[in-house]
Length: 353
Image (cartoon, rainbow, N blue to C red):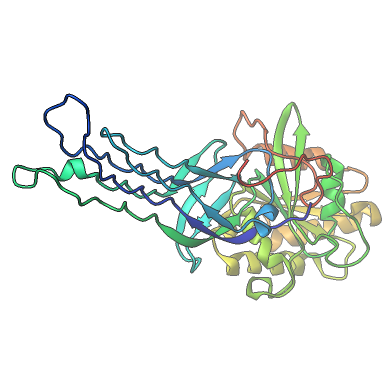
């Protein structure tokens, strides 16, 4: 299953049913008269957040959603049946935006949360409702109110407690594989990670969700590389883990400053989030070099530096302890785990349930 975090769809609520023209024709009843009922209400368009989903890929193949229209009224003052509401199921963290992608119409962050985005049209009036002292046999009816329609954008922002950022080849995939059950791809080339990853970390009887996004490079906030598109997935994180490669070609201080500048340029409060600096791959250098780079990072503005090794697991406990300090005491995870782009055992699903 491929990962998709944006999709454009067309939605239309149901139109109201028309009213009925009808007159009483009953045997042995002296007086007749109009008895046409009103039409039924059209169905609403409802968005519902459901657990267990982490991609919008289904909306690539289903892009038009129309609710049922109301039924027409009938004689004997019978109101037509209302149209069925159309419930569109989306992953947790999905935002619904207008066609210009400037206004957020709905933000679905809780399991079971529902938002009525388009209301169905009301049913038309039957001829009985037009009866008056001067119009004893009306034949006019209401046709029913039309439904609403619009194009909307769905934008998914993954829900995670902690976010993992860093330059390409900083060792983020190895790191998340070490502390979660994720099986992220690891390669000796830039941008091995091309899609966000989610994993559940279990540490000291507690759990939290960790999100890994593709590596950032200089100019990412302006569209360079691929990491800028996925920065939105860490907007909801409570704390960021900045992974720095101590054995890489880029100086650790420069690497920290590049990512900090891109987070600040992107906005959305990313530069204001608590950030833990993790100096990775310490198993490849000596202890003296680790101390030297740690001191340089502290002088450059890092609050605290955690020397770690994603390959061996060294230093992980201290880092994860620091992450827990930023999370609620009762962090319980019910969100999906594993690699976002691969879900081999998931049963077939559609946005309509």
